[in-house]
Length: 62
Length: 391
Image (cartoon, rainbow over all chains, first blue to last red; front, side, top):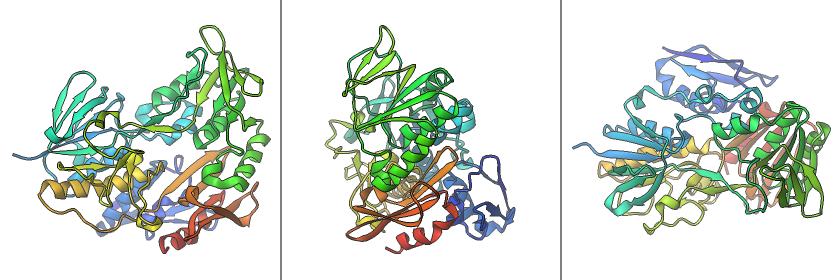
């Protein structure tokens, strides 16, 4: 299981993570980031990519 | 014996290349050489929140994947020369390094213009150290003169106003950020800065810095004299390629690479990030340097895989490189986000909102849509990005 944490104090809702793993990260209608906190191990590579491309480096993957 | 790789440059591109080498199965020694004393850190905050709240390089460090825990970090001394055919490098402190494979990730540095007058008081903004030096001068009662109205200049202007400093922006351009954003949105951004009290001197150049030991004012070409507690020079960049001279590489505007980020040379060499002039199949495969934040990550991923293949004696992936360039900017709580290459467009068109409020602009050339920029419309850009990917 992959555990995802986003530091919402750092997150600026740029949504770059959504393009890497749209089943985990999404911007809602108000432009705010929403995400699921756990994902299947098979999704790890894309979720790590999402963490890599976050301009604010707000995403932690464990 | 296992092969060794030296990565020249300890920024984001160097880090991602090292991680990608490991992900591609490279098990040899990796040494990353950096001129700054810090581990790889995130630079965009240096002109924004880190400049405003105080600069702590350690807090800006990128998380490093466990796969690169065994990398040697040789920090604090730049590479000054290289003999690539002999696979050797020399650092400023005299250290010699040998390699089987090389990653060029040496990036760019701020351009300095030869302008007469005192040196003290003139600053650039590229490193955490630079930001710390500038920070002390941004306060009420102080006056900042910013040279250049590109993204860094405008971000520093916004941050400096937020800290209460008087701000003058001097630039030869007719609008701020005109090259990436075009004249119409540039004018819209100028209106936002004017609302926050920035004093623009557009179409102007700095003729001379005035003062004794330290700059105290700046003389423009129209005779205007601006008070200056600090000068921040943000007038473009220069590639760090001097250490590669004498090896017969194409160094006209960075380091020319192919779609796999591979340099055409007899030894396995790749280049990444700001310094890599690379083709992108979304934009006609014309080799270009792209100084956007996500490019070191995208080129680093590709370059690490290519170099690992070369060191195994295999052909790297010959498929097209088609990463979507993206950048972001924050100015007074306004969020600017771009996808594609608006800077190469020949025309721009407002498609939503208005230029001085929340808006979306499309950018085109004779091949069609090449870029999109949104201001305070981040969530609505996804369909435009998709359209760009389908070009």
